[in-house]
Amino acid sequence: MSGNGASSSSLNMIAGEDVVNNNLSALVVDDSPLLRLLHDIHLKKYGLRVEVAENGKVAVDLFHLGASFDLVLMDKEMPVMNGVE
Image 1 (cartoon, rainbow, N blue to C red):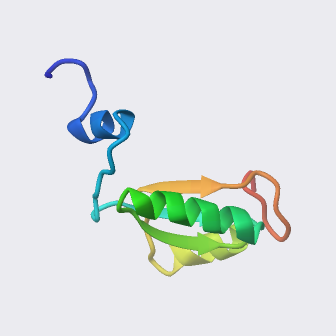
Image 2: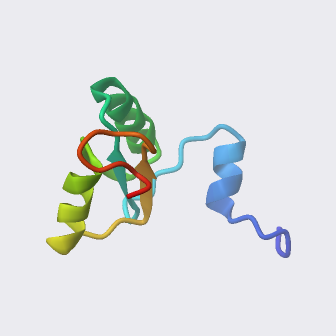
């Protein structure tokens, strides 16, 4: 399937198959412990390495310490530092 712009991994996800890719990492930033847990579970299902933070300040601190992520999911409204800041 060349030329359609979709990788085989994305096609597998569309088809409902689990895709394991341990090379990708994600940062989940949310003040809700439940939402952090749900995102963590779902992303790990697809083989992503997941880090969580409870607010934007913790997320920024992780980047200042040299962390990098392929995907960042951030709540827009949080205490301390929100997603917009």
